[in-house]
Length: 488
Image (cartoon, rainbow, N blue to C red; front, side, top):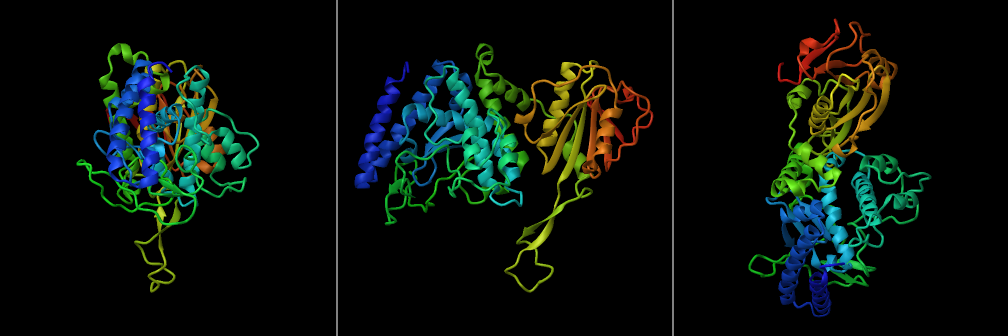
């Protein structure tokens, strides 16, 4: 690996100090390990840029690095700090080889690019059991498959750590027959969210992979083969002094927020999405035009989306519809149990407001690429709102494709269709499926099509015209008509 001699030496020095620390528990050694971690991170950043892996190198150039000895964390990007922070526990991270550590660095960046932090914030609001654990498996499988493809294409400075979760892992762990590789996290999440682990391993997915040699119990960054007590970990202050903190005995997965208890759960999906967009904009603005042209397609698409705010105020729009669609009950400590109001130890219940949305897209030849780009910008605006179920129906003169959309990463680079225009097929599709009776139907079109359509049997209907809303050819739209040009 050209240009890695200095990195390898820093890593070797850090490993030697960590071995000495684990033997002596000399807290003064943590100051030296922290300095080596910061030096190592800077060298990795320089190396990735020199390798023209600008996607990753400039990302790390936009962040600060922090050693967190008091947390059971291999590595994670904290978005609710500015600049964003790449935090890691060197006592755990430096157990891996050099190529594996660089893989872990890139793994954490890809999670952010694919907007997994915001998706996690939506997932953990679900009432399903073990949803966070299943999300971790699905998100790791999606990211690690893509990085493995980069390795196959010649990125020899990367190596997946032993035990890293991939699509093949999910197939064996959950007893699945067929699992497609290189899919979005949502594809894997839908496959496994209701399944039990089939191979007898009841432990949750923790971190990118098991820490090498960690066969015993984790105690503040150290591994003990028995259950004996060990000193708590430290997180160094800026002056290098140790501050005792409590620590859990298992690894933390995906620390996308600062360590305050409950901070991730309390942050809204919209807030986390905006943190992600801000980081993407910061990275993009550091690059020259030449370097931007070298970015991988998935990164350049993510940057483009970060600069395209929706034209329609979807927050105000959904206020009209939330609560008007069916919802389920979820438990909450903020309300008394209606059946036993004197039992303060029992949880009450509240409605879980979930907006069901069917988005029909006119994919006829009259819709230009720029218009379709604007449509997907609006769909991203919908995705940033509160919990929803969103189905996309691509239709020209016939329904071409129907699929569930849960995040920006699920959006396809191209649409199917580009023939003539007919609105009726998409409306008949939702009318033929009773699951859309309580949905909001949003039809994106340039407006030029049929004069008469059947009445949609959805709960409410909304037409969004890419140009002048008066271009809509339908005489009776059975719903509100808006324009992407800003007219309301």
